[in-house]
Length: 253
Ligand SMILES: Nc1ncnc2c1ncn2[C@@H]1O[C@H](COP(=O)(O)OP(=O)(O)OP(=O)(O)O)[C@@H](O)[C@H]1O
Ligand SMILES: [Mg+2]
Image 1 (cartoon, rainbow, N blue to C red):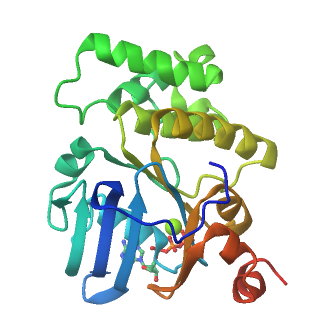
Image 2 (cartoon, rainbow, N blue to C red; image 1 turned 90 degrees about the horizontal axis):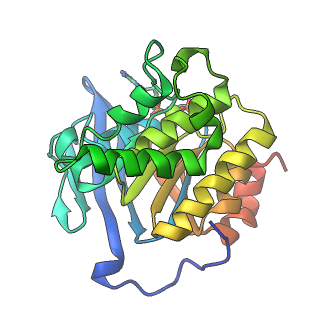
């Protein structure tokens, strides 16, 4: 996830993995997202940053089909998914690693990982084995702890397990909500390094949602700032990191 790619790279249609336009979303009759527009290209790491309650998790939940869009357009791999079911969206390769990890605390690490493969239509036992090996190679701690119940693992190990579960779904785009929350910096670095390896090797796209603006923008190619449910700034990660508005609002300057 090296920085330095500018936001002005020309985009062909086949580069465009996720495209969102004029997206409105809410809960009950309370609107939370307003006219959101964004995109993720193939192999790109994109940061979505903003304060508590800005609507970051709501956006991811809507993209993965768990919350219906009120209006607007969402396409993934060229398919209209604005009103698609969550299972269908996951099977297409848009996989959500939710805020708070949401593991099954009483199940083993390996059973949690296996659950990530359920979206795969042709998930053979052999394929699942290969993917488990891939995840264990990336996060050796998970292999050591594979028979342990997930609820007894440390926060960092649980985050590895949640990301591993996401990878078991063979994502083209991984949506990761608050990777760093509650974790020690050294653990965050380890997890990001592993993610970086697989992102580059497999041309994986990642949408990194973070309250920690520095962490996200240092790893991303491009970024968006969301405030009160609206995208207010977008640009290359480098532009955002050096933007006085971003630095004043999110980096304590
Ligand atoms: N299930 C829900 N029902 C009703 N309102 C909700 C629900 N979930 C979130 N909200 C509201 O939607 C708004 C956006 O919340 P959201 O969780 O998307 O923000 P966020 O940017 O992810 O915040 P955080 O950084 O704290 O995770 C908030 O006002 C929140 O209270
Ligand atoms: Mg959130």
